[in-house]
Length: 341
Image 1 (cartoon, helix red, strand yellow):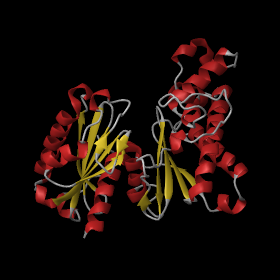
Image 2: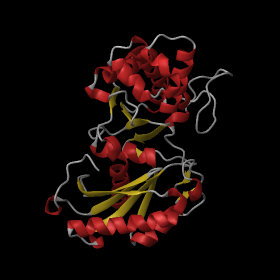
Image 3: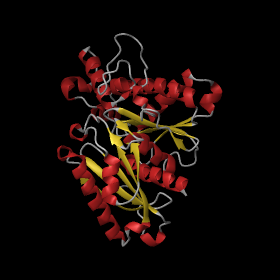
């Protein structure tokens, strides 16, 4: 289900674009118009063990279903955008070795989807697609540049500078979670890549869980100490909302780790806007804890940067939620389409 307000086909500005966001368990597919408004949306299961070719055939069937429901034809759709988890070779349209998709390794996924759909396909890392969605119609829509950090099981990201998504020579551009924030020889290990001292090891849901268990096992006083093995980022947020002092302090310390990474990103590309997305937002903008988390990030950044840089940089929560991926994939397809005219 999408949270976006849907428009009717007569309201849409042509051409249309498919946006396809592949996840570990589900694939989100949306049909958008040229302004980023959603006409219709459908979600299907990934069914990872059945492989990518099967999935792309089912994506095609879902796209046909969307067109039927909107009384449109494939000729109304200029291009499709596809976002998948890394690792990839974006220029060759290849999946390489995505960690959560062991049956999808070394597969020409773009060619497979183009053959199924019969239209050109633009390709992106899933976090880069989410960044482009926020940039196109979300928190970044009035900006020319921005950085997105997606906080989930890992930490993903995307970098857009002067309206251009940074892909990189090795299709690794925008992998913000693998910035080094702790150079010490005993720094924490990244859960996915095994790298030491990465931001992901400190500020992802998996990193948060490991850090929290260690602090509680060391004697931290919290209502969560009674069941340490079942600790999650969500439970820490809930305890903070109930007034648990340790939980709130822990969340603020997590914000400080994020601030270190954000400072490095800003000092390198100076985007003017940093957006925090993903499911691990500690309640986001509508809760006291979420606001304290955001302020901890802003404070940590303020303490580490220059006054003029701080004054010219906004740090804010994302606004599209789980819809950012499919919207951004469609947006990347739209951008490629207009460049080709």
